Image (cartoon, rainbow, N blue to C red):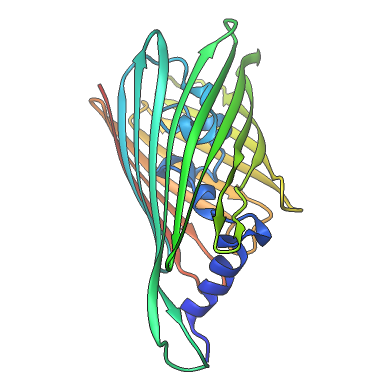
Length: 297
């Protein structure tokens, strides 16, 4: 009988790591706990160092230097370690993101029964991005990404580019954004190059008016289309906070077979931010637990 790990191979290795359905799916996993909890609406919600992974135009604004570390236990034997740094240089805000992901203990079977061996699939991405204002309300940004993958004895690498824009306050409390990610190519992995998950995303955020100064709430909406997939993904999220110290988040993503809802908590104190996200998966693939810590200098 085929077990859970065999199903994982069928869903991820066969469908995603090779080119048929737009491989390198580790680039589709949310960069930090806050964005995972919010259903991956980072194209409009990533207002910190994580903007380098979602929309470089969002790097503008706060001049504070930031550093973040995230551990993502995605599902079954899929995990990722993510490091982000934001800093100001030459009058511009810059973001550097490092993503090291792996699928461990993939089983090799020659016939139904016990595995004859196991191996790990390893992936790495390094991104450098910047953003700047062109008017008081409009910002733009761009980024470059190096991508590496290793599967058994085969390796490949490539380069990708990101572009983004944001319009703040198009009407009161409403912001809009647009991002095009992962435009580029990979060299061959065995017989053919893996396709980068190139996508275009549109986002909107609305600051919900409340009478109390202690409470705040923002609603998010995003649409994402991967160029080599037929499905269009619609994402919704709400984030509430108490005195900008305690945060409650919930998100929903449409168009995925194995995931939809997500939720999380966040705490902020004296420059430190700690975030947690939970995202359940269907098909007995387990649940995702993401925890991240961030420090603002």
